[in-house]
Image 1 (spheres, rainbow, N blue to C red):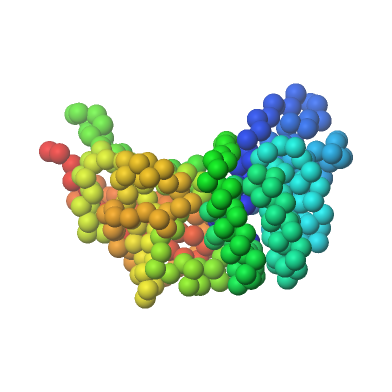
Image 2: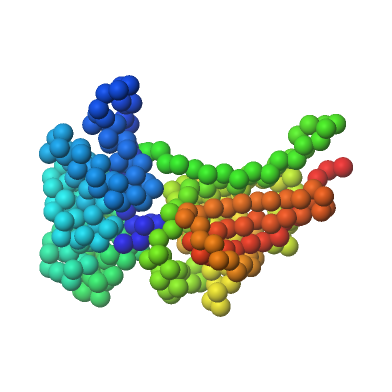
Length: 340
């Protein structure tokens, strides 16, 4: 399972449910526990989400959303047999944001266990229930054990026919965002410029290391962060990695080429919007300002993705933008041009 992209549909489904605050001094209500579970899943706190889901099921053993959350947590913890039981329970939910995805997750467990017949049976159930996450399925490593089977291509063809009929689902939710900002202030004029990057943090996991070194992540673009696009908003002229970046708003993705060279790619949001591309489809973007990054040796490990900008006004407004994820650090020089 690939947490940076896998389960994203399911997490959005869970986050789609607002929850009321618990009253002061009262035991957590089902709605408050649901909110807590959603936040834990978003932070990839699988052990915490598992316990919260079990608390929800103590309140209502037929809570489809709780079974769904429990299945996601157990699946991510590698407890596949227990996860399968939870996925099957969740698959009976009449909620269109839960039942179809739970069927797909059950198929994933069977695929991981090498049980191809059962996996394809659950894929058929997912399709019949209204599953629409076919773009996600195309890159989900849980499905890798099925792709060489002739039935997989047949399923893809059938799912394409279903998609062509216009099946559309809506997903909504909230997720945490981080930001880093450099602002420039003149005692005479007040604000004279700023640079802001905002992004969705992703928790580092050791199993990412193997994925990062795999061919899947070479010669391609990746979403930088979780959920929505990482945004770069500048209202001054700036040079990053030796590339001129005019004032404006940009969507930011990470690109890795053969030979382990990395770059930030700054995309025109208007072009991305015209194609209606979600951030998890970053690999389908084209063009943009390519900012080369250098690999920085570091002994520190970032528990979650962090992006920082620092600029020293005493050194001709120069500095660095730094991307730190787990034991990996990438950086590019920054030079800001302020109007006199």
